[in-house]
Amino acid sequence: MATESEGRDVGRLTGNQYLVVDGDLREMTKKAAWSVSSCKPGNGVLPLRDDNLETYWQSDGAQPHLVNIQFQKKVKLQLLVLYVDFKLDESYTPSKISIRAGDGFHNLKEVKTVKLVKPVGWVYISLSGTDPGFEAFIHTFMLQLAVLSNHLNGRDTHIRQIKAYGPRPNPIPNQPFHFTSTEFLTYAALR
Image (cartoon, rainbow, N blue to C red; front, side, top):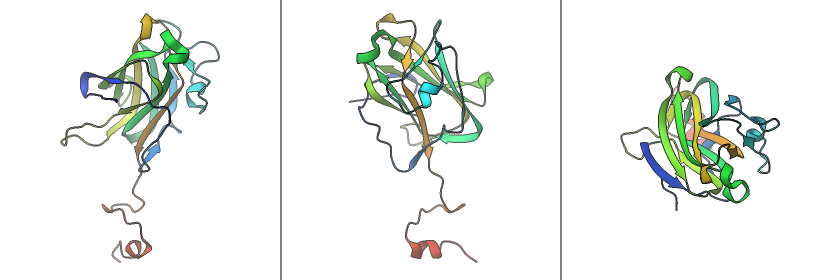
C-alpha cells in the first residue's frame, strides 16, 4: 500500500483513514513551539493542533511552505503523522514533502522526502532508517516539514493535522529491560 525511502529518494504514500499508533510511542509535540512560514487569517498553527479534521492550516505565498516544530530539549522522534484530504482540498493537497531536522534553522538537514499520491487520511512518515545500521529514531531540537509542491500545480496548501511521535521513556532509568510484572520490578535494582 504505502512505501517510503531514505535520504533524498522519493517514496509514495496514499493515506490511512484511522490514526493508529504503536503503544510504545507517545506524542512529542505538545510542549513544542510551532511556527509556519505563512498563513491565511484564521488558518495558522492552531488548526494543526486542535484535533479537529474539519479545520486546516492554509499557507499564503510562494513555495516551499514550512511548518517548524522546535523543542526545548533534544528529543527522539520516530514517526511523523499528518492528515491531508485530496477529496476535500484538491489542488491545496501537498504532493511532495521534505522532512528536515537539526539543532535550529542554521543547520537543518533533509531526513526524508516523500511523494503523496492523492492522499485521503493519515499519512505515516517513518523518521527511522530501514537499514539495521541506522537508529530507530532521530535526535533533534527542531523538525521542519517543507511542502515542495501540491497536486494539480496548486500554489497554497492545506494540512489538517500534524503529530510527531517518539519512543516512550523507560520507567526505570538505566535499565535496559522493560519489566512489566510486579515481581520482576521488585528485583530490578541492586541495593
